[in-house]
Length: 218
Image (cartoon, rainbow, N blue to C red; front, side, top):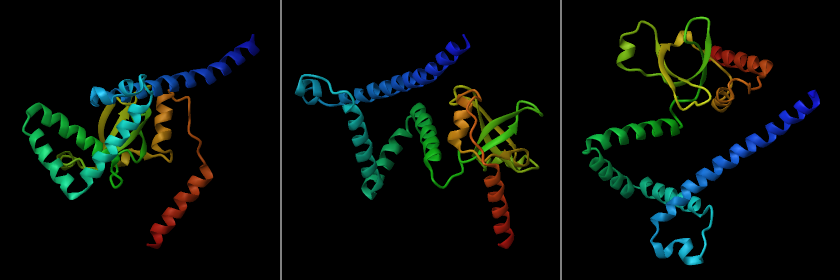
């Protein structure tokens, strides 16, 4: 029975990830294929070829995004975007949603910001209990003026769904920076702590010593 159980678990570990990956990719492809409905009826694949082509919507979506980016990247495109955003800003509800989503996207895809660049270990929900958090901002504006210690903003995700969670503002001295990447931290959260990132203790300590020596030399 022990051998059969081991074989059953090994089979589950193979097929369940494959099945979930397949259905997620299938869902995304089907979702993107709906962009073909934007084409006039006479230019849609089913009209031209007599049958649908799975994945063609993905190609169309990528082309649309690339063309939009090429237009928005030049001077004329930036002027068009400015006019478009000024129109949206005049609509109360649309303005709030559009501005909020745009700021989040700009922060996440920024290469110079510090949002979601560092995995942290904090004590939450009480002292003595630790959880993984992600640094989202080091500037808290008015909040900082009310605090005696330097404060940073962190995001504490829920598990196994890391898209929801809590925003906390805690003193920098109370956080511990981890060597794991953001991807590794997310994998650990989604897996309920089952997937633990590998850690090279010797290499990490050598990197810390080298960084301290470099700062001391400066």
